[in-house]
Image 1 (tube, rainbow, N blue to C red):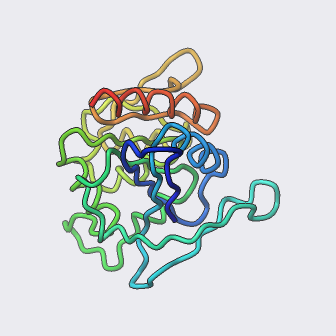
Image 2: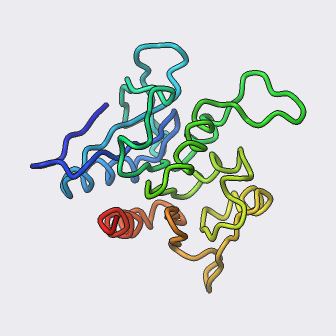
Amino acid sequence: MLLSAHGNSKGKIGVFIEDHFDMTEYRLFNRRFPAAGYDIQYISNLWGNPTLQFGSNPDNGWVEEHLTVSKDVKDVNPSDYVGFLLIGAYATDRLRYTVKPEKGKPNDAPAVELMRKIFATPGVKVGTICHSLWLLCADRTLLEGKKVTCAHNILCDVENAGGLVQYGDDGTVGSVVDGDLITAKHPAFTDELIDIYLKEIEKS
């Protein structure tokens, strides 16, 4: 699924997605980024299929949002994008699945391998929100020493992976910028994440 910018495109933003994604974030991403002049392309591990359909969390008792993805993470070149977003809820937990884990072998899920390439590409911004730091927890080198925030549910995962979670008066802070990584706490901070993310990518 590709959503085109309103007017001339300023660049393309890739959004990692899988089943059980957050509806609030999905709807705001789809509305605000094209309105700001950016194409949005949803990407996922397609498991050898030309397309796959994914559904949102059943927050109101049913799956309200569906989308069909045709861009495989294996075919993504980070330098073709101005940045990437990791959508919240359980999508990124599913994306870090590895078929045949072995003792001592780094996680080889295609989405994790792409994240390594993204972090090795200077200037490419990565935005995460809520539970989506789970994807980075699959490889300690992606998180270690970085200042971040996240949902309270995954604090232990993030800190065990070496992330430096930032705290405030209400548990974790709302949003954090550390270099090319922008993180936000939960869906109520989606607009704040988008505001900061747009400022950061337009600095580049």
